[in-house]
Amino acid sequence: LNCRTCCSSRTGRSKRACYEKTNGQCEPTMGTLRRVYRVVGSVASAVAVVGVAEVAVTAFRNDGSDSQTLLYMSGVSRFVRSAWTGYQISREYKSLFNEFEKVGYDSEQYRLARSRVHCYAADKIVELCKHQGGVYLKFGQHAASLTHALPDEYTSRLVVLQDKCAQDKFRQVKHVWNTEFPHKPIDQVFSRFEETPIASASLAQVHRATTFQGEDLAVKIQHPGLRFRVSVDVASVRCLFALCKYKFPFFDMGWIVGELRNSLDEEMNFVREGHNAERMKHSFSTFKDINVPKVYWDITSPRVLSMEYVDGCRVTDSATIERGGVDVGQVANTVSQLFGEMTF
Image (cartoon, rainbow, N blue to C red; front, side, top):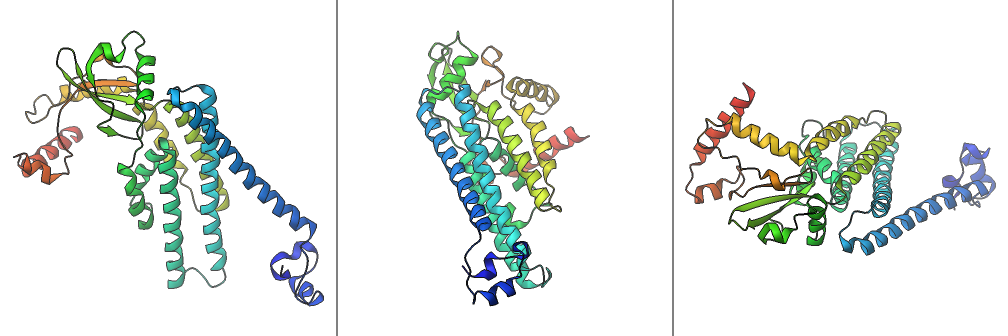
C-alpha cells in the first residue's frame, strides 16, 4: 500500500513524513486493518442475512401464507437491501463532492459528473423498487411525478416504474380471499375466475370473474402481507432519508414519506374505496357520459374489492379511443367538466 492512501494525520505523522521515511511504501497499521476487517465483516454479514432470508422466503412462500415468521424474515432482508443501496448511492455523491470541493461546483465538468451520479443513483433506485415492490414501487411512482423537485435524470428513469408491477401467484390470491371470506370459497361464488390478473399495481392486482348469475366482475385483491411490509418499508425509507440528511444536510426528502404514509393508510382500505366510488356515482349522477362501476358489498372487505367489470382503456390512449368510434375531443371536454365540478 502506498502510504499516501493509508496514512493520515490521525496516525500521528503526516503523509509526507511517512512517505519520505519509508521510501514511498508502508505497511497498514493495525487500526487500518481493523477498519478493513470491520467493513468486510459488515458487508459479509449483510449478504448472509439477505441470503438466508431470501432462501427462507422462497422456500416457505409456496403455501401462499403471510405468516409472521416469514414476514419478519422478509422485512429484515428488505431493510438490509435498502440500506446497502442507500450506502452505494451516498458513497458516489460523497466522492463527487470531495472531488470538486477545492475546484468548486460551478464548472461544466462538475455538472457532467453530477449528471452521471444522478443517473447511477436513479438506476439503483429503479432496481431496488422493482425488486422490493409494494411501497417502494409506490414511492418510485410518486417520485417520478415530482418534476418540480427532482432532477430530470431521476424522473426520466423512475417513470418506468409506472407499469412494472409483479404479480402474485394464484394460490396467494386464494389465501387472501379465504382469509377474508372463510365461508365463501371462490369456486362457490364464481362460475369462472381467471387466475391470470388483468392488471397488477403496487398494492393489489385485479382478476376478472363471472358469477353464477352471469354477472362480470373485476375483483381487486390486496397483495398478501402488505400491511406488515408497508410498516417495515416506510420505517426503512424514513431511516434511510434521515441518514442521508445527516450525511448531506442540504438533502431533506423526509416529507415524501409522511405524504406517502397518509395516502397508503387510506388506499389499503378497500371498503373506503368502495364508499368513495359510490360517493362519486352520486356526485356525478347528472353526467350522462360517466359510468361508475357497481360495488358488490357482499364480497367486499378491507382487502378485497368486487366491482362491476367495465371494458375500456386509459383516457390518455387516444388511438384506442378513436378506434372505438368515440370523439377524443368530447372525452377531453368531459374530463375538463369533471375536474371543474370537483374543484368548484
